[in-house]
Image (cartoon, rainbow, N blue to C red; front, side, top):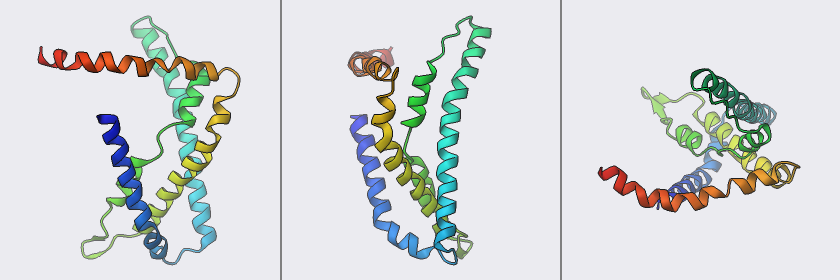
Length: 171
């Protein structure tokens, strides 16, 4: 149920953006196309680099803390962390946040709201198209195909976990 609901809410969010995007582009005043492209490219690069850096570095730090506190130093393989970073979330929350910026604040138009929505949309589009289209190539790299198959166990684990949840919550 929750997977379907999440999928439907994401679909509605992106339909909302698609319906508003033309007006957002028209509303970006005083910024030439080259500047828009540079700002969008900089934001895309920052998002991809941050996501990759986070997924490559933070699990190592968590592993070190676990090793110090519990003696358990299990860390996900670097290739798997790379795959998670490359295939990460695509911006539904960012889009919702950008669209939630009010049109007016204190009676005046919110400064650069349209630019914020435009750059957010550009990041989402770039990560969906560029990263999404290249995902099969990344997965096909040596050492990653097995990692994807190993993660297939999640689908088998969900039904028993879901069946036991009401009993656990009732106790």
